[in-house]
Length: 243
Image (cartoon, rainbow, N blue to C red; front, side):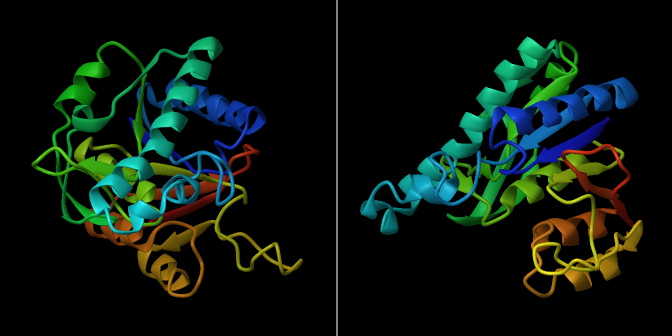
């Protein structure tokens, strides 16, 4: 099996989600079972983006428990939307959230760490469906409070799940065809890397580059989980990151 991670851009509208569903369907054909991790729909300014949700009330600035609860809702909405559309698309799936995911978190609200993952419910679900959708960016502490994993935390969710589920690799879908030598928003002359070692990739993340969350990349290196960064709107080969 594999893990596929779809970010806010990939989830932002029906046209983009159709790309997601085609990739999921193709992945099932090749790997049989897929765990899908999603981010909230869109980015800052979009109604269901995380930043938009936590700005609904000034009170969230001093109530970390409530802020993490509302911040987690963007991924829940995205999961429900994708699940319903996948059913229409003909792909059997289910959404697991909260305690169902088995993701136990520790640390600070807003920047938690994943302590462990109990995959029993996920594996049981795979007996019934080919695709399990899991909201990224969140887990629950031992008291049952929702905790979020910091900016880009859905990437960490995907890698941690891949480790716990013994997935062959994690696919990250982006609005670029892979890891590039330059930002296409600013330069016209750039190339795509076909392969990078973890160390080479981590060096690229030292600046303002946010290809994936650095904590996720560090965990992938530690657990030797290959990553595959590819374009959401194309089927061309992307960039492999591995040992």
